[in-house]
Length: 92
Ligand SMILES: [Zn+2]
Ligand SMILES: [Zn+2]
Image (cartoon, rainbow, N blue to C red; front, side, top):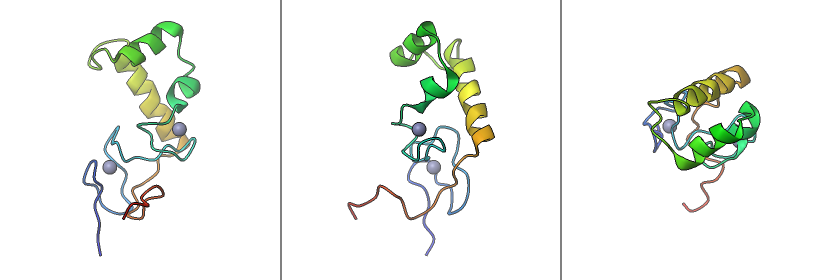
């Protein structure tokens, strides 16, 4: 039985779309959307952290380059492909 990702509709074993809400963080193993690794891994400055917290338009700086740095850091670490059996899905 094939399952697809709730967030980006990728299939078993494929990488998620960038910043899919179901993607697992390769640094801590929690959901990327809710884990706190990004500021630590990228060593954000207070100004950059403020921009992230305020969620200013990510098509413009500084969020644009922060997102690019984060995507690059994830690639270097090795992104986690989608698996139909989710670690945190216990409410089935
Ligand atoms: Zn996905
Ligand atoms: Zn993390």
